Amino acid sequence: MRSKLFAPVDMTEGNPVIQIIRFTIPMLLGNVAQQLYNTVDSIIVGRFVGDNALAAVGSAGPILNLMLVLFMGISVGASIMVAQFFGARQRESLSRTIGSCVILTGAASLIIMIVGPLVTMPLLRLLGTPESIIGWCQSYLIIIFLGIAGGGYYNILSGVLRGLGDSMSALVYLLTATAINIVFDYVFVAYFGLGVAGVALATVIAQFVSAFLSLRRLTRMKDYFDMKKEYLVPDGEYVGQLIRLGIPSGITQAIFSMSMIVVQSLTNSFGEQFIAANVIVMRIDGFVILPALSFGAAMTTYAGQNIGAGRMDRVLEGAKKGTLTAMGISAVVTGLILLLGRPIMGLFTKTQELIDLSYSMMQIIAVGYVIIEITQCLCGIMRGAGDTVSPMWISIATSVALRVPLAYGLVGVTKSPQLPQGDCAMMYVSMLISWSLGAVITHAVYKRGKWKEKANLMIGEEV
Image 1 (cartoon, helix red, strand yellow):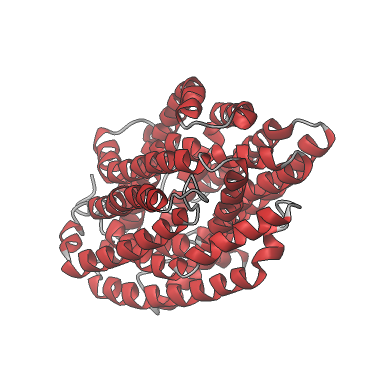
Image 2 (cartoon, rainbow, N blue to C red):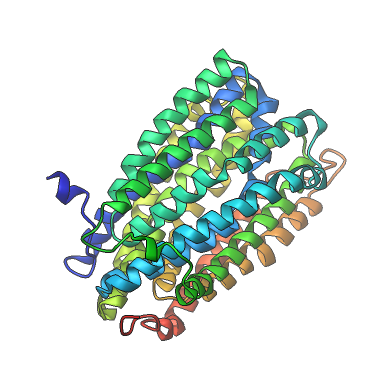
């Protein structure tokens, strides 16, 4: 039973929806556990240090995400290549792909460890981060950057495991690391009084544990690929393929993070209370959006394996049924969050005004979580086919060309003597509009079908 539970899922056979759900559930639970990293950080600093510390952890997010674009690119390229080579049963190519991922992740970690601490304070100043929280933001980010290898290797190696169809192992390792993170968060903050720096240190320790466990699991999967020394060297062909597939996703994440930095500057103009409210909403948002992210990632693996096996008919069937299933699940999750929103927000702060403000913002974007399933699932299918460029342009159009001008424009037109900074609710209205238009654009691009031309370009004879 245990070996079956942790065995890679072959998504080229069986009912598409059942296979997608079977693969998605452990990944969804894993994403919930991963989201707990930041959420527990926020709850503990909000409760034991104060609302300003809560705002500091949240304000650090956009800068942290910007520095993680290298890992994002490698992870997406790895998932696509691993899924297609696994579906095509090409052991040699699979082994060389995984070895190249290990080397690239080490190089990316070294770059971020050097560059991250150097740019932290200039970026915080550029954002107009309030002086009351800027010191906490800096200490949090520097600790995370110096220990980035743990998080980087977990994200890449778990992406490899997902490409192989093994989302259960990644879940177990992440649950273990999350428990460690929660314990160290409490100890470092409540007992040692390390504040924001304490939650950053706890996160780094937990991420190294999850990375180690993922690497150990891969070294034991000898039935599917080889983890030998000769494969742990950069292979020009496979590195090039990883970069080709990963660059669009890396660029997407970079542009998205930069747009969030620009929007964060607008958020900061409303003061510490709105910053703290935004942190609460975004922490809850991180959970509500997980069905979309999990189904999107599952669709990438599903499409990759079936394209590798030459089953385009299953790709099209899974895309339709999987997206509808994801929308239904997201609707249920969103409804529960709206029903229990105030008590959940009360976990972060004792300030009733802050709870009320956060809940009103969440109500604005609630329906968007169902709509965004269309974007995530169909973009996942396109990525699995090897088309990472179309999702890149869709993301740029929605997160930059639409979201940023809308946010500034709507806030600007609502300025008045009573609201000299404008209506902060317009920040969330702009988000809902950009999500909705993004779904329309994604569906149109998917139906056009150009992504199908990318399929099978990688799969050929063994190298």
